[in-house]
Amino acid sequence: MDRRDFVGTCSCCGAMALLGSALRAAQGWTPPPRIPRPSPKTDEGGLWALMDREEERLRQSSFLVRDAAISAYVHAITCRLAQAHCPDVRTYVVRSPYFNANMAPNGMMQVWTGLILRAENEAQLAAVIGHEVGHYMARHSVERLRDAKSRTAFAHVLGLVPVAGTLAGLGVLAGAFAYSRNHERVADQIGLELMAAAGYPPLEASKVWTNLLAELQAEKDWTGDASTRSLLFATHPTEKERQTKLEAAARALGRSDLDPRAPALRQATAPWRQVWLEDELRRRKFGESLALLDRLTAADPQDGQAAYFLGEAYRLRASDGDGERALAAYQKAAGLPGVPPEVHRALGVLYRKTGRLPEMREAFGRYLAARPDAEDAEMIRSYLTEGG
Amino acid sequence: MNLKPALLVALLASLVLLTGCTKPATWVGVTPGELVVCERLAVRIDGAWSRLEGTQQPKHDVWTSEGMPLDQLHFYTGLAEGEAFVPVKDRPADKPIPRFRKDMQAQDVVEMYEAFASRDGSVFKLEKLSPAKFADESGFRFEFSRVRKGDEVRTRGVAYGAIHRGELFLMVYEAPRIHYFTKHLPQVEAIAQSARPREKG
Image 1 (cartoon, rainbow over the protein chains, first blue to last red):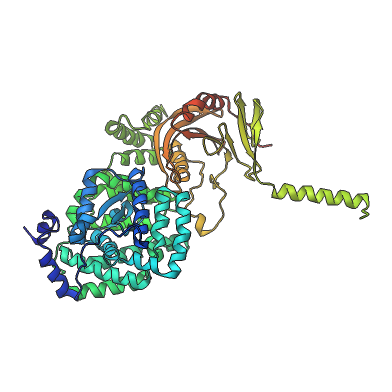
Image 2: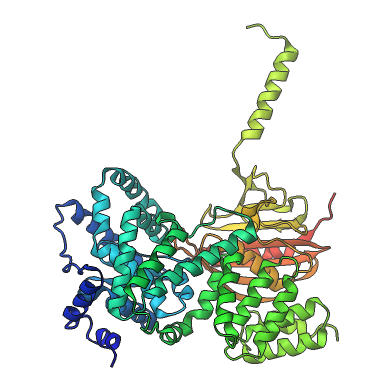
């Protein structure tokens, strides 16, 4: 049993002394004791009460992923990082295709599916969660609450929340904390140390930002719009600066020998990946999506699912030459393991447009054989009777 | 104040024009019987509908029976190559908006509508897509469900579409899945059956 497995199975108990000493050795930083529930008479208590109410809304939200397995998987990562604070933390997986995670001062952690989809391994997901746990452990939101400037902004947002409600409101509320750049740097550093202590290679944290920077650049290149920013970046230090500093700090911590646990993430997310990739393409941020899918297909050239969605991204973008790119991607995907049957429908549609009727019939036939009760089966069957 | 009649008429005329320009869109009742939507799609109605007047969108009409946002019936009448469900310009922000192409198939139109209906993060799910007559064409009919992002209301929708002489005609009805959708579905189906295209004048 390696140390990470041990930490995972003991639910952050007896190993804490050992891990704590590892952290102290790393940067002279020790995790604080568990945060007691503040008195409701204090400003911090009021903030917790508000967050409790929002958490109740989140529990009712249609956008909350209620699958026990994926929720337990992500919560286990949070717990490995949060160590002794684990009993105070609840992790919610939220169906939203954007790269985002946040943690409220009362221990409500939200992890959005667009973030999980983008992580190449468990360590990269842990990097973002660890950063948010860092804000929580350092109680940055309370500091912000007591800062006169942000208090005004916060009061303004509180006025908005009952109107916005639900997930939209939670996004606004999360943004209300608007941590200072110094807070972000501290949370980054704590996050790296928590990663190392939990058995994840800290260097993976900088790769998260490297990948995201590449996506944002691809989006700018496609749209020509320089204003593209991710939700998480809105309150964070500039992307490039952050990536550079994280990389330097991670190298200082070492531990590059640790396993980033790519297969574990792949296995846990497999049942959800198709839905999340569909959600990703609905954003219609084709620069970002193509950068992501290029990365996924390069990482595993035998990944039929990623190859199919690469074709989908080209087809939906529909720029010059994208029809040919989509066809090539579909044809390649059709021969790979793990490809969804929808690849045959996609091929059939392209063959129909170009009048290749025998190939169209074969492709649609394969789709219907795999999905006889598909929502569009009746439409597809009508195409099979065309052209005699 | 002593104004010459001609000046008075001119002033009144400009006042009327100004009011016309700045007049907000308002709901007006639709008289049952035969009518032509946006001068391009003739339909027959027998229920109580209101339409939004003054939207400045020549190819899009929106109606409601219960009042917005409870239920809504949209007509897109004759979208041409390159046009979208919303007005688009040649600017970076509009680049991701899907546009109509006349070689689109039923699936492509559904996806184009899906992109429009889920642009705010709402969850759209196609429930059924089948061939159907619409606007004198061999068109298609689709049903969908949606969870609206803003208020998390679960809705159901039905749409009829066809490409007629290279232009897209689409009518979409959407209402909360509890009570309202099934209440108005028969009327909506009857409107779809009655729809006939009108050539450009």
